[in-house]
Image (tube, rainbow, N blue to C red; front, side, top):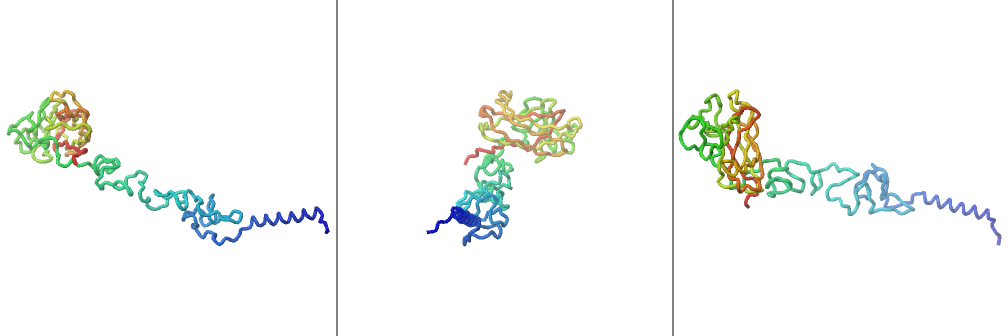
Length: 331
């Protein structure tokens, strides 16, 4: 038998190595793999390659290693194909898909007209999200109505009922008492208290509703109050509402409002201020309101009182006063 030289064997080995390398770098036909014809492949429709075969930075169902395709189960651009945990919102190609939020998600906490996608709404009959009460307040951006059946917790809040036909200064409607000074009642027809034109205080002004309204001067600390029929409940939310009108007399027409509080008695022991009906300065009746949570000792505070207040001498008219409960309504 003829022996080959060592140099001949080395040459043959070199040819085998070259052929093997050529085989590894040459793509093998794969009936299951096609060049992408756009943004589609076996990755569930999320392809960031813009039509190229292999998705940027990921193993694509069309990429081969040693003649074998690594296919299903590849992670593509942040989305797990086949069995992904996408319920919530798609992160297609690392971005939101340009469509509406997927069912069950909340649009980044935004308010969208009272409806959260697949979640709480302002008409679902349930107190949820940050609503103050059922379908009102908080993100619903509306005012909670009074608890059903409660109405105004103040008696004669419109000041229409009067104890007599007396006229003059320092008179108040029924259910109301002066705590200091001499607050006044004004009647459109002068039937009780004063005419609005008296002393030029409210010339041309008529009551917001009905015949009468009340006015009080801060410089004389003309405070007034009523004893509640029943005390408020600690921890429950209430709202005070009223309309205010500035005096028309130049020295009294400065912006003014009313500080509002609760007290144990008409001597104002254990006083607790609950809020303020903000200043009014426009020559018209202005609506004012605030909400508060009854304090822990509310059961001992049976007097509801008002104090006129302003940076300068002021004499604001007051009408349509109410105190209503807005949370913890009985079922």
